[in-house]
Image (cartoon, rainbow, N blue to C red; front, side, top):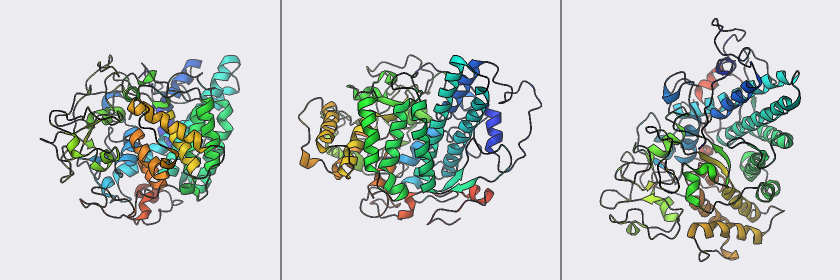
Amino acid sequence: MRHIKFLSIFAIAVMVAFTACINDLDVEPIDPNEATATNVFSDELSYKRALARVYATYAISGQRGGGGGLPDIEGIDEGFGNYLRLYWNLQQLPTDETVMAWDDASIKDFHWHTWSPNDVFIGAMYSRIFYAITLANEFIRTSEDAMGSATGDFLEDLRLYQAESRFLRAFSYWHAIDMFGNVSFVTDEDPIGAFFPQRITRADLFDYVEQELIDLEGDLAAPGTNEYARVDRVAAWMLLSKLYLNAEVYIGEAKYTEALTYLNKVINEGGYSIDPNYIRMFRVDNDQSPEIIFPISFNAQNTQQYGGMTFITNASRGGNMLPNGVGAWGGIRAIKELVEIFGFNESDFTTEDPVFNAREDHRAQFFFDPESWSWEVENVGLFTHGIGVYKFTNLRSDGEPDPMAEGDFASTDFPMFRLGDAYLMYAEAVLRGGQGGSRAIALQLVNELRDRAFGNTNHRITDSELTLDFILDERARELYWEAHRRTDLIRFGKLTGGDYIWTWKGNVPEGRSTGAFRDLYPIPVNDLDTNPNLIQNTGYSN
């Protein structure tokens, strides 16, 4: 958390660009006081404020606080339409880590693997991705225009701001690659006007994002020199690593050696270190963590909305769970498969000790009261069927309340990229045959995480235990609920199909095989209807 107030600077200009497929865009608001890209950049500071709005699109849902109207996208409740909330749900709910109790629209379809192309949440995620891309495009155009007359420090600032916007555009395009595959493609070089964006294939978009990140690497701030919550070149190295680690899924070509090239940079040149306090990374004071490379920043007073971390912290508490600094909405919880990856059983939890304080792995932040909860999810709609998760809270790491507390709004930042993930990615890339790393270093990195998890060296693994199956389970133990699991399971060939079954997968209590085409989400029907250049993903019918 930092005391940041995100400003709406050029939202109207962006909204105009965002509707470029259907509207005449050569218009100006009648009200001369209305903020647009043509009149809002009155001084040098205004460009930094505009950059803050590009970042803020991942955290906030609209132009007013508290979900109070003027949403960024239409067709969905403003709180539901928050970028991070949508991304988290689409990454977590189809997996063995999370299940949702609520009946909002089609939200249960994600855990059941029964979603369709007209799903409101899928449509909103697609719109959110391209709203963020359009916002970045507009800032890149505007900053490029200003560079013609800028000099000195202001020119250097503009170059840095533009590089950060290009990173954020690449970041959202990575989400498009991962979730949707073949999508619309627009950049700052496209004209402002009515046109149908061209379709880009997954492979071509992979190449574009890869080249963008390589090209802008030197333009981003050096490691450790940028302000908190703004990216530096380590974030670009991390995103390249993720792109390469998943390349076999995205383009059918292994790039584990390339992944190791950039993971070595992240680990050895990034300047980040493993946080000795695992819990701190998911608490209000996680802005003090030395491990978080790229956070999505929140503040209970200045980023008030019902998505993002406000959603994650409130929705994960219900029943008789422990206080976590916000409310108790009773929505998301774990299923037994996640908890059993830690080696825990129902009998480990008691009414007297529902958090299982005797656990040795302190990453396991679970709650289960056998007197009032059910280990088996007999009814998906009952929050107390399953296991509570209190990994994310709105408390400080010392248990004290958020000093900026206000209602149910959260101040905990979301750790989008962190070093512990890079350690496990390194080990996986080595095991998959990548060159430029070693099993010895991979084993050392994994055991460093396990030493932190257990508080001692008694639970280190041996070289023979370092397998891909172990890595998948260790990623669940280390990174659960951090919005990685869907991508991980796809990379390991286990999200769909019958090799790995979990509770309610396929919409039956015992779980069943689901179609491999669900490794990609469908292109939303509304976008197919309005853009003739798009083609539906295989397996889906409109």
